[in-house]
Amino acid sequence: MAEIEVELKTAPADFRFPTTNQTRHCFTRYIEFHRCLAAKGEESGACAKFAKYYRSICPGDWVERWNEQRATGTFPGPL
Amino acid sequence: MIVLEWLFLTIAPCDAAEPWQLGSQDAATPMMQGITDLHHDIFFFLILILVFVSRILVRALWHFHYPKNPIPQRIVHGTTIEILRTIFPSIIPMFIAIPSFALLYSMDEVVVDPAITIKAIGHQWYRTYEYSDYNSSDEQSLTFDSYTIPEDDLEFGQSRLLEVDNRVVVPAKTHLRIIVTPADVPHSWAVPSSGVKCDAVPGRLNQISISVQREGVYYGQCSEICGTNHAFTRAPGNIGRLLSPLWLSRTTREASYYSERLEL
Image (cartoon, rainbow over all chains, first blue to last red; front, side, top):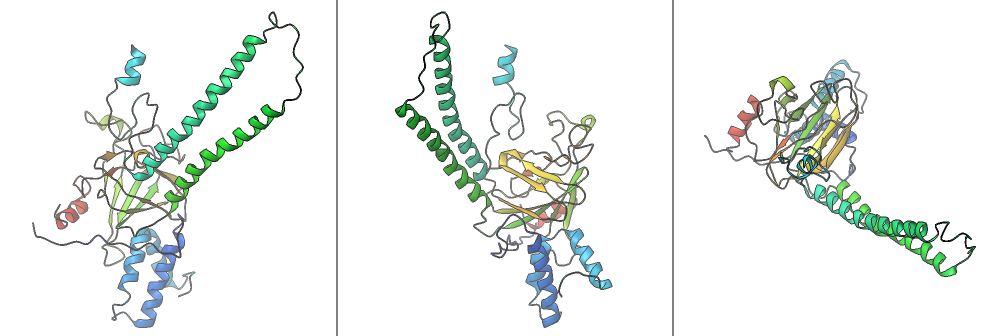
């Protein structure tokens, strides 16, 4: 088996969301990512970490739904 | 003898409930250790009060039984006893409250950054688990469903209504973030030996942080009435199952793919 170093890493604890309820943590990270994309463009790579964060925290179904909503222009959040 | 057998001579299936179990399951996380300790702390006061009150009650019944004591005494005032019986009952709750609040707030607190995020998504009546820390796109999650094994399919040694087909595999001694949410009705993700019982509320993500201290197979059940199959007929809503020997096998194909990559 090939030796691959894998670092265990996930979205860090965020002081803005110190409680059990992490719903907005997920939503905020998703919005941050798309704002970052809008500001810096797809190529810069600076937004990759935000993508990792929201993928770690948000359920796949939610992300899928939001992606659809963005595509149809019905996304409720500020982008 | 039968009662003794029930009480003491049962086979312990480690981190699952046993028949006629009286205490908690063995602690696997510092959180559960804290809960068990608090339980013992409170029991000290509980027994103290029980003994004291019973003594007074029995003594009163004994000494003031009507043939012995036909004329009741008419004491209406006693400053010393009144001061004592006011002060002591107000000090005792304090001794209970202090460790209780300390535990409560320490459980809520997220002190360190977690190393892994696992999403436990409740369905009627199974759990979906997502590991998506290493995704490079929105669709790549390592996702698998975890169903209870029906009674008829159990193999010898497996616990009825506790065993699942796909276990959740997590590393031991690592800070885990578990995001609990359902996809339909409210559920609750509970693993008694890790001291976790977290309600899954639709449209909300609840986070719990645990760090499993020893390797083992941990069992849990759905703890929120989530429909007809919640408890009896075959599948109790969720069976959260934590298996700690570092990312072992037994999950899905994708999981074994990841465990190969992790070299474990």
